[in-house]
Amino acid sequence: MSKERVVVGLDIGTTKVVALVGNVSDGLIEIIGMGKAESNGLEKGVVVDIGRTIASIRKAVEEAENMADVTIDSVYVGIAGKHITSINNSGTVSINRPDRIITQDDVRRVVETAQAIQLPPESELIHIIPRQYIVDGQDGITDPVGMTGTRLEVDIHLVTGAITAVHNLVRCVEMLNIGINQIVLEPLASSMAVLSSAEKELGVILMDIGGGTTDISVFRGGDIWFSKVLPVAGEHITNDITVGLQTPIEEAELIKKQAGTALVDRISEDEKIEVATIGGDKKKTVSRKKLAKIIEPRVEELLDLGLQEVEDAGYRDLVPAGLVLTGGTSLLNGIAEFAAQRYEIPVRQGKIPRGIHGLRDIVESPIYATSIGLLRYTVETRDFSARRFAKRRSSLMSKLFSWFNRFFRG
Image (cartoon, rainbow, N blue to C red; front, top):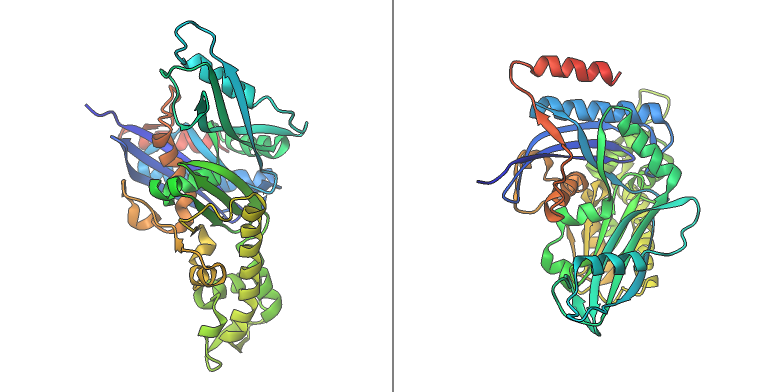
């Protein structure tokens, strides 16, 4: 019989907090609960106001609990932010036993050797991701256990974060009496939601453009080879609109979503939009082409910065599958076409994959790529440890559990 598990992904972003509850059975995910709240306590992925961040998380979690009729005990938490850095390293060990059969202990030893690097005192490891193993010069091996050889090597991708930023994020969750099963790099989570195995194998760039940060990652040979977080994203486009059109920030965000485009040449001079004025109830009429002329340069800058990082890392010519855009800002009209024209590479918008059921019609937007990816992470990594993510409420006790949760979470 298949065993069902209830798992929870928590995406704490600069502009929103999303909690997704999924029921996992036979590798399929049925989304049974979703909660969403405006994020008020983060700046570029870093907690700057613990109280407001806790309040945002509480709201999203309680909405998800009520929809799914569960009590959330622990979560997988996505992490990004300007403090995230990554490095590739390698390690080597000898196999000296007479049978020369590689064991799990040998794999552990070689990974420990590869991760033994000097980190800045203010940083800590978040992920240790083996990219490939090499046995006696034969590379491209994904699992060397059981093979024979005298020399075992590993290439790994190390992801680090600032200790203060990581611990503040953890504190915000644990203050709500919710345990953290694992912290997951958001580009890694998003990749599990929107990239195909063929793209990862061939070579692809994933650019997750959120509100406060843009997460960039490169995948080759099925694994992550490069990751970077840039402190430039959708909020910067909104701020440019605010200044350029002299309109309130809330109005600028709405205009960006409803009338914004990254393709100036597609807009005629005759198209007009109404814009609210700052400090008044009046509205003014402006050219939509003027709006596009504000947006296009910022989009160009953002994409240039991301692709330059990939080029500087030496992977620009090793991604034949092209560029996949996801995150809320990827919904901007014309951004994928603009990127395809500018860089002459295949570009597509990330779509939620097969194997996701339940509330798919609600969460299939790229906005939820990270939170869905966090659920898929538990499946892809087979990480169903003894820790409990959530427990189902009995129908008779639902209201009582809900009351106790709200009481203890303040």
